[in-house]
Image (tube, rainbow, N blue to C red):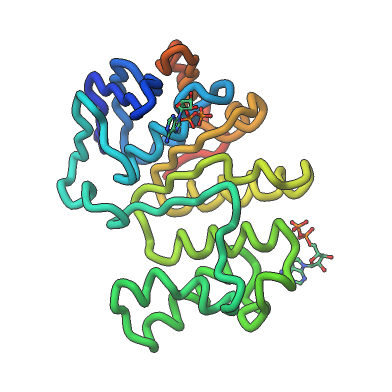
Amino acid sequence: PQIVSFSDITKTFENGTVALQDLSLEIRQGEFVSLLGPSGCGKSTALRLLAGLSEPNSGRLNWADDTMSVPDHDLSFVFQEPTLMPWATVFENVRLPLKVRGIGKVEARGRVMSALELVGLERFEKSYPRELSGGMKMRVSIARALVTEPKVLLMDEPFAALDEITRFKLNNELLEFWSKFGLTVVFVTHSVFESVYLSSRILIMTSGPGRIVADLPMTAPYPRD
Ligand code: ADP
Ligand code: ADP
């Protein structure tokens, strides 16, 4: 089933830049969609609209389930930079979204430790971000995104700052989470390799102004349940 649709969305910034023009698009539940295109073609703008971090000037964005329109509810966002709180431990960083939702300590502890196990960092719960490698910090960010058990994971060039080997490892981990949890993933990248390797569908975007020029179904590398 469809999870979200864009109907004729146009986004113009105050300085007159038309970042997206007449964008129409449907995303179905369980898809791994890559938004692929050159810098400035509007990928992040489209993702920010999905996250509720920005509003279109015209057109409509519709979640199949109304509750999804509330920012942060059932949605997790992973940014290019790990954006961890440097003064807090790995455990506290991953617990933050649960704390915000008022989830009690005992339940939170179990969920945080499960999320850390998923990314292989359960032994680092007491570490601080400065003690971790770039790849490990990104894994903490992913654990923090998954700890709320979101339906939709929005990722904005999450691995761009990492070396190629770490990036490839994280690609494989991400595919595992995706197939395991039946997540819907919207993944912004300018890497052709990454989009082909990861996605069940690639949307190719172009700029001037931002629009989708191709919508390619891909063979998912992992069978879905
Ligand atoms: P991408 O993620 O594909 O690199 P963006 O969505 O970040 O592209 O940007 C799309 C276009 O909108 C670019 O021309 C960019 O310069 C412009 N843009 C993005 N954010 C703003 C903003 N806050 N104000 C003005 N222009 C912006
Ligand atoms: P990255 O993906 O950031 O490159 P790696 O998995 O290659 O991280 O590990 C980098 C270093 O960090 C390794 O030398 C390893 O000792 C340590 N490390 C990373 N993850 C773990 C882990 N789960 N347990 C123990 N050590 C780890």
